[in-house]
Image 1 (cartoon, rainbow, N blue to C red):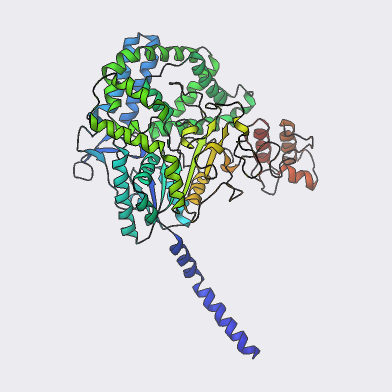
Image 2 (cartoon, helix red, strand yellow):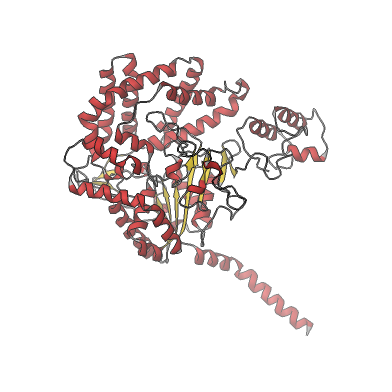
Length: 604
């Protein structure tokens, strides 16, 4: 009998060993859903005669032509001071016309040239990995999603960002049907980055039944869900800044590049961070290209120059304001109003508080085409209905998540310079309702919700997420610039959100807390916790057991690492802040960065 039982068990074990891999693959197959990436403006190139022989690019934020136009605009700012204002204005006008002339919209809000539009990508992204359309964000998505779906189940939805978001919402609905037909799956997961979130929000609003039947997850990352303050200011003419704003921005670059604020010893710590941060912002503004990297390097050199010549940034600030002061009568009236007011896609980025002022400023009593007015008013209603749209989507079983970066100052060209932001979009808009230090209406807003089970205040007290539309489903990534997925831990986190087959929430995973911070040095995304309440960090890093982590601890760790000091087992554990199992120079560097506030947690 015993022999028989052994034989049966042996056979079962053999069968299990033989079938283990196929069963595992089958489990992934059964649980996976195809992913649709709805990208930012820079992801969506506009073509003349797209998907046809002889198609040509007319607007590409990744192109050298676009960068050349941006250079003209920047040169205009400089020339406004070193030459005369009219010369600077001419350069700016040349740059703006070079960018916008090919993509003008008619007074109805339709494309002036009906042959211009985005390329339609029917095949999965894996079929285009050698093409220029697959940028680093998309490559990171493909890599991070590999454990959840096959490469041929990740798709890119392209859209014309100039046009009515409701039109793009219809094409997204049709694209979802296309993906489901191609893959044979029952639902899709949508990742919306930047302005892609405007399209997905419009889809959820206009086609709720279709979304309920066909969408499992909708993740919004760095999306101007409730608008973009820069666009609001631009559309209302609020572009003149004070010298102090410009000084503050340049001073922050000076600190990050030269390290003068913290002493020259920190040059090596800060230069990598400054380069990474500036490149993230540069990529969002100019697109991803070698030229962008070159411009960032030049910006670093400029920052070093600024560090040596404190008068330079004041000169540049004055130059900009000279130009801005003349913009209303020259640039706006002559042509810019005509360019801005006819693009429904831009109106979708105007915050509700600026909407009526924008109408008055851009039209000033001029006739508004009824079709255009209906289109821009329609999206205003979508924006104002976002709370209801998101709530209904969740109730229908869709996993809705909102993510935004923060910790970057908006370029000081408009009145929103002081907003807590990811460098492009203010957090109060990308987090769909967060109260931040720039929009607080009450002095005690940061104690609105502080009980143990429902505390949504950031450790740095910059943000209170309890005011968000989805306070339990909104995450904040400190030190991550606008829409940046090139950081592997960020892409991994976003994919984790996408494949929540029930609603993801901020207390679900101790690694993915509501507030996280990214370190360019350690390349890790870590929980950002309230100082003094960090898990196991009251002693971690405090090598000299003084009760605080400071530069002395970094020095002690370094001496232990090179053998100048001996340490017992407990001290070595405290000094091994990266959890590598040994105390080395990396630990000393992390402790020093923590001591000066460049790190908020340790990897260990």
